[in-house]
Length: 184
Image (cartoon, rainbow, N blue to C red; front, side, top):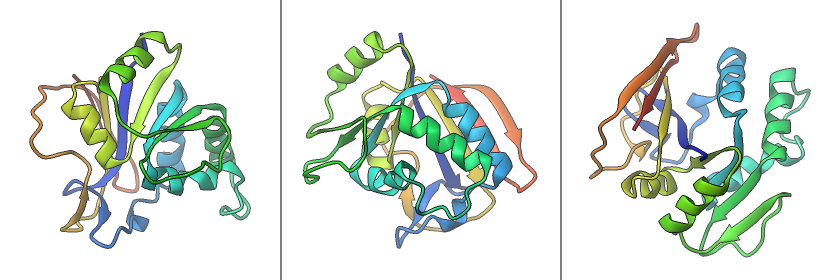
């Protein structure tokens, strides 16, 4: 059975984007990016909300990355090799390969996907991940906390959810990022 993982880079006060939707403060350095690559290497399917999917489409052709380094190229290869499911009521078409649209988030369909998948599944986008957390579907939470406080914005974790978690791993990086891995 595949595991559903939620991985997010967040500010120390728990936001993935500021009140203007900006997240440039969260750009990982090469060490953190290589760590994230290894973290996501077992993922065979990404579940995205529309906004995060639109950001991630840059990995399809790398035009947004002038002179990409090996870590960038590694992630692009991992991302392109995985299936992607975009949950959106407004998106009419996808612009990336191995991608399909679902109009509604269905917890039972995710359970079936977990039961049948050969590789782990990642859920991304705060709203979509919040739904998966509320439905009790997320098995692992990986947080990379950036050394910045932004005060307001899009929260990495939803309000109104209580989950008892067990800390499995923690680590710090030279740029001040702290990594926490929790399991349900």
